[in-house]
Image (cartoon, rainbow, N blue to C red; front, side, top):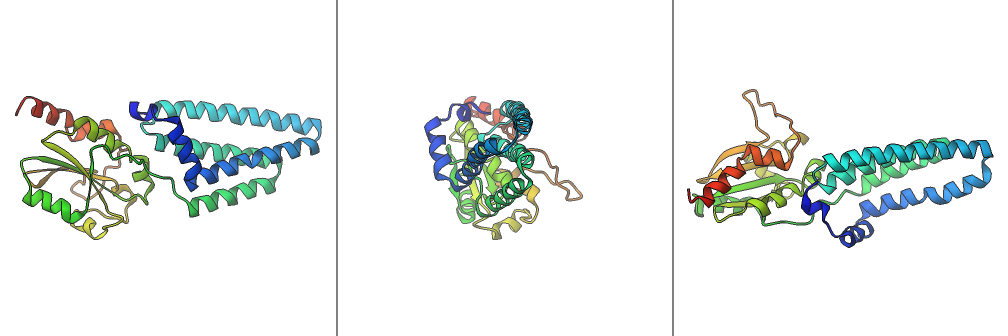
Length: 259
């Protein structure tokens, strides 16, 4: 994960856990296991209690190993939390099945309801990005100083891929924004009619988020790319991939060197 994400204020994350329905409902579902476990301890035989404790320890160790792997490999807290919650739900459902199959069914139903009624919140920071409408973007590209670069993220926060990668673009904007390179975001969930003009198919989950670099008012690079047969290269989005694909380091160095 990024340095900014790792150094996030714990109080901020605690507030989000309480205020966001997605996190709050998951916490309530997980804590519900505590009174159930205490009640089961008084009902189960010593042999069955020991078996349940053994399975709980196995599940906890397995969860900790997977979480440790993810915290090293994942670039954003949003993706890390999504993955660890997924692992936690699997392990909890498996433990609930050891306790009683009806408890496992209850958890399956509870997690399904949470999935339907709530959504993981996206990264809240904007960095130096400008939130644009399609009309504002068109005006900037046609009437503004076209010699400048504009890197634009087209996303929809109703799609999980956009939520998981929502911190990448703001963090890149903090690092690479100059008087020659600007960053902006367009929410195609609010302006779906603009997608067709950009060659983005909103029905395909693999096309969002889409990143486009404009120069002299024209598109010069985009990600994901489309080959001659209109098939998308489905590469996982990361800050390193965006930096390499759009040569942001080169644009920054050219600006510093006055080119």
